[in-house]
Figure 1: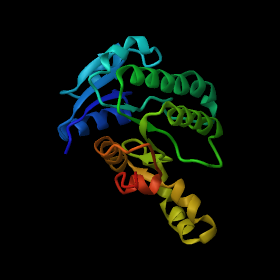
Figure 2: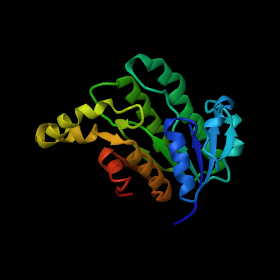
Figure 3: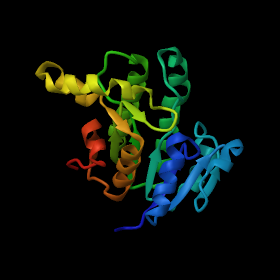
Figure 4: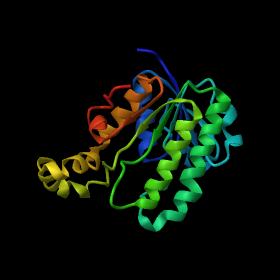
Length: 220
């Protein structure tokens, strides 16, 4: 397996801490971007980069020699009431990450997006679609992951919906939507992100919920 140097934005967050630790266990080098007040959450063994993800000039010089950039920044606990934050944080952060990746000549860009289309969360999906479009236009080899809801510590309540999902998957008219908007377990999400890092595609690869459940196994 090729050893990668990975720059992770949002490395102090819910998903970022787990991914950073997983990449370190797999033998990769990790450069972890965090605000000064969050550096204590970075797993030991990673190189902490203090900066603001909305200001590429605060971290762009620290991306190299990474060959992969994983962008995990986003509004926490997204809901329809946070549409303004999606525009103020989520979209500018992807633009800043792409600018830093371009300056560092990153070979592979990994982006955590969201499942789509969906009957709810339209503002959130619209911003993630814009982020995906910017990646598509960037010329980077990229992996875009599209989970809907990630089950994990403190986020188990949707388990009660599992029987409904199973029923919908059996009905031809609702099967595609149930699979596209299915639940993903935390460990599956981390495995899919780590496997994406280790198996960069040529061009742009999109991993939907069924792909994520398989640990990121999809044609690319």
